[in-house]
Amino acid sequence: MSKIPETRESLLLQMRDPGNTTAWEQFCAVYRPAMYRLARRRGLQDAEAEDLAQHVMISVTRSIGQWQKDPARGTFRT
Image (cartoon, rainbow, N blue to C red; front, side, top):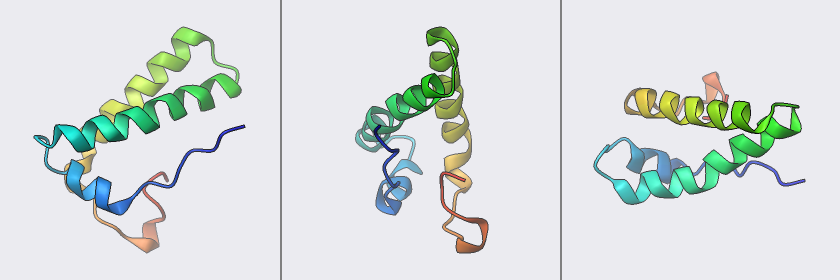
């Protein structure tokens, strides 16, 4: 069973620039499939898992500009 990798803070900071396509491609290449696998392991069907992964990516896109590291709030994944 593969785990979701730790999110590198340096990548998250680069993603705050919406024009940094390299950072976004890197993030999506790692985390979209991870979200899909997690959803499938939790019993979602293929289409549902794809939808969930897409919604997670949309959520990250909308909120990454305001993200700041805050140990009191937990990790990026939480």
